[in-house]
Length: 131
Image (tube, rainbow, N blue to C red):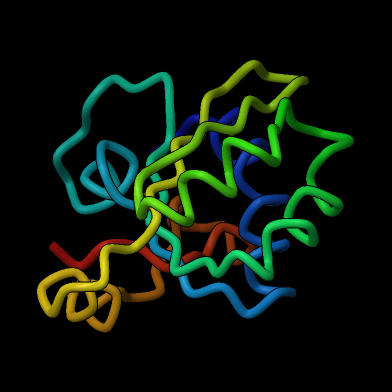
């Protein structure tokens, strides 16, 4: 993967998730590009195991750099659905999918693995989907 806008746009989200101990993994076209199946993309998909109690902190950490709506996030967490973040500087969309509570999805987050989005960039190591 070689898109610096993607890296620039996701780093604050991942930093917030790490700070708040929110398990996550990057999936979709970004993850598949790392594993050799390059696809053109204009967004990032992240699966996160977020609780309602964490939503105000997520909003507080990200509101200066993203379009973010707390009510939408609360609804997504309650419904185990998804919400979007828009990185204001790059206008890149990040879709955050709340981890479903079934055994399949719980095992998927257990199989995530840490890898680099950019091979020679130590700062680009994040959890990625293993499948």
